[in-house]
Every structure is written in structure tokens, then in C-alpha cells.
Amino acid sequence: MSSAFWAAFKSDRDETEQNAFNQSVSWRCGLPPQPSQLDRFYGFPPPPAQPITQAHVNCVISAFNARTAILRARLRRDALLESKLTPEEHIEIQQALIIKGFLRNRVQKYRANPDGQFGLNTRAAIRDYQRSIGASPTGFLSDQQRVAVLQSPEEMEAREARAAAEAKAKRAAIDAKKQAEEQAKRAEEQAKQEAEEREKKRLEEEAARAAEWRQKIDEAQRKGPEYAAKLSDVKWTLREHINPMTEEMEYTVLSRQSNGTGAVANVEGFCERNQVPFQATLENDHDPAASLGFITSRFDNGIIGKKRINDGPVEPTSFPAEKWRNRITVASLIFTHDGPEVAETTWRVLAEIETSRGTLYIKIPMFNGNVQKLIANCQHRYEVEKRRGGHPDAPMSQPM
Image (cartoon, rainbow, N blue to C red; front, side, top):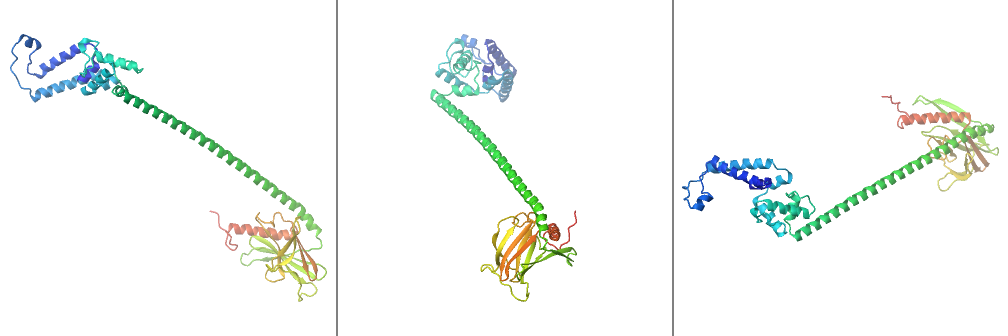
């Protein structure tokens, strides 16, 4: 209660009120009478001694607790915190104020001793201390001010150094975080920009490839029919038959091409999974039973010759032999975009082969009407196979 009283103390009136409270406690709790100062002064004999019972103690404690609650109800913030300090902590604060030269005996009645009672002298000392550190002179120490006033100059210097170091470290951490965030943001923006540039480049390249492919298709559709019309001497016949496994119409094209000096190529075009091969059987035109000589490769046993696709260059070629030594694959159209002989863009294939009966030329006009029927049929079968998962004889799956 002493701490609460001195926190609420403002003038002598408060002290008078407290003395009245003490007397009322003696009366309410029925405490044994004690000799007064006047009795002792005049030498009157003390009243007979009476024991202090537990009931007296409990009554006094209850009264003091109630008084403490009343006093604390008047207090706020730092004053309320001070009221909860122990008398020993009050004494420590007074000793620190004396050492620092703030607690002096300005009001003689209340002295300047470290007695734990925060009278007018102690309040004045606290205000002087607060002014010295640039704080508002409230007369009540905050927690931070109480810690500071209890420290020695060395401790205060060390505390300020620690605080400065902590503030510096905090600023450095904030700066580092800000710098890292800015760097991450720049990196993110740069990555985004690079991704956009890559995507733009990819789209441009894709558009360029699409334009180039479209140009090749347009060229094939323009030159193919013209070339096919010029080859009036090269005939292509179309054979049709029903595949007993799939019950679908299949086509085969045939062409007999001779050099006029005894060498002939019987060319056959047909569907084979995802491609359209054109194979030629080389024979002696005068006597099919007689052999026809030609140059073969010692590496793959193919027949040596030359080949030209569309308006491309004439290139030396080894035509791969098939089941028989004199049967070769001249061309093989595909329906994807990853080869030199793509169905959409190939409009002619030419082959030149040196035989024992002279040079033999093979001409395949891809835009011949019958050849076009074959290619369309093969492409249809290819699309069907893709939908059937690569199994040409599997039934078409029904939509869900």
C-alpha cells in the first residue's frame, strides 16, 4: 500500500487523509491501544499490553488491500506501474537519483534519504532527471526510464552502444531486404521480359515456318498440275480392291516407263501405314527373263543413281533394294512435316539410273489424277490409324 500511496501522493492533504485512514483501521479492527507521542512526552504509563491476534492481522490486511485498490484506481500509466513496485525497488531508484545528483533536500519535511517514500523531493528529482534526458517531466518513470536511471554511466554507455548497434543492424537488415527485394523484382522483370522476347521470337519463327510451308504448298499446287500435264507420254493406271480385313477401298497406281533401248521400270505406288512408297522393278525390256545390269553400292547393296525432288538439286543416291535385287524404292511420301518427301509439298520425284541397257529415267508426277487418288486414300487411312491408336484393323472408338 505504501507504493500506491506515494504514487497517488500530491500534497500534505493526502498525508492527512492517510493518517486518518490508519486511525480508522485501529478503531475498526479493535487493535490494542498504543501510547501516543504526548503520553511518552509527559511520561504517562503505557496501557496494559494486549496480544495481537490473527483476527487483528487479517482485518488490517483486508483494510490495507482495500485502501490500495482505491489508491490505484486513481492512477494511470506510469503512475500505476510505479504503485506496483516494492519498497526495495523505490529505495534503489532513490539511491540512483542521489548518485546522479538529482535527489536533494529541497523540502525539509520530506528529507532526501533513500527511505522508499516518494515525497516531494523524490518527485522533483525524477522531474529533473526526465528533463536531463529530454523526456516530459511527469514525475513518474516509465519502464525504460527506470531501467536507465538504475544504470551506472558505464552501463548506460554500453546500453546506448548496444542500442546504436542494434539500430544500425536493423537499418542494415532493412536496407539489405529492400535491396534484395529490388534485385528480385529486377530479376523477375528481366526474366519476364526475356520470356516475352523468347515467346515473341518463337511465334515469329513459327509464323515464318508456317509462311514458308504455305509457300511450298502453294508452289506444289501450282507447279504439280503443270508438270503432270506435260508428261503425256507417262501413263499411270489406278487399281482398286477391297481390303478383306478392313472392308475398305484401297488403291494402287502402276506405270511402265522405258528408255527405248532395252531398260524398263515397272513403278508401283501403294499405301503403307503412314507413308506412300513408290517402288520400281528394273527389267530387261527385250527379254524379261534376261538380267539387267546396274551399279550397286558395296555399303548397303542399293542401286547407284541420281535423284531430284521438285526443283531441288540433282544428288547422287543409293536407292534401297527391297525383296529382290532389282526392286528399289524411288520415293516415299510421308504425311508429317519432318522429311524431304512430304505429301503436301512434293510435286515431282525424278530418278536416273545407269543400266546395261542405257540410262533409265523414272518420273513420278504427284499431281497426276490417279496418283492424287492414291495419296488421298493413303492420307485417309493414316488419319484413321491415328484415331485408332496406330492399329489399322481396330474398330473406331465410339464418342463418349
